[in-house]
Length: 280
Image (cartoon, rainbow, N blue to C red):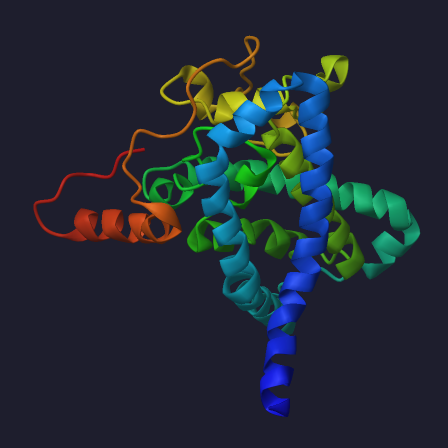
């Protein structure tokens, strides 16, 4: 019995780290939706309920299995890079720069790396996994959590590159937190462009165009935090409020299990002789 209790306690720890912040975010974004949309927020929440269940299922799977494995994998890769001299010895640079400027550098560079990694995820071979993230037809803050494990693994490239620059662990953690919670914000169902601030940072309206189905804007707006990357590299698109349908046209299967299996099926069909090419 004692061993069973200890096992349950170990299983509960990931939930304790995830559920608390998730509940606070749910309350905050529910209040935000009510302030911006009034009673229509309840109607929109009901319309998104089915997709929200899938997203919550993915949160549970991620907390129990995916995140622990990816954390171990990231630590292994970073450790091997350091052991083979593939990590800059820049500790003195960050010490001279100071804590907050170092955090700012980590966030700016992390978003720069993330911009290019995200563009690559929209390429022909990686799209089947990334399509899972785009499959919500009612975009909400929790849509950020709809992500295939392979797509999640690809997202760790940002952290590997930042680590290779010798940035301190606390700066990497700050970058992850800021980009994660800003990711919640830009997925939120609020009609905000952020005005003049939107010239520098990404907004919910800007990112909604990224999730639009079959329109020009769905191939744009790849950055998470800073809109300047999309402006600089010609992928910025925000003609106005996004009223276009969201999601993807592919049939990704039923429920979370179907979405987990989708890219595997697509890749299997693609490598078999005589099969059609991948779509993007």
